[in-house]
Image (cartoon, rainbow, N blue to C red; front, side, top):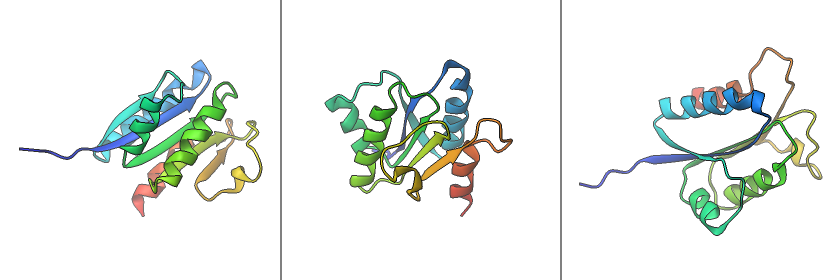
Length: 126
């Protein structure tokens, strides 16, 4: 018997102190029925693009500029594949062009009480 599992992909570029946000996001997606794949190696190899192409939901998280371009590229690829794709970005990160104004990009402030994961919670509530 074949079973279909929904997959979510979370690439991230974060500081060590922000790891809890990635796992909080992963827990939220698991509660929504997704099997979560984390992109911890930060390479954009063919294998990573295949994983993104095979997922049903994509959320990138950026709180540190290191590797942020790779996360942005994967987000753009997911969008091009028609996958629901969001990018959660701390406000101090500079994005190219008007990317920060895209409706699927949520800019957040670190010191605000509203956790960026709440943006994804609200998506599922609608």
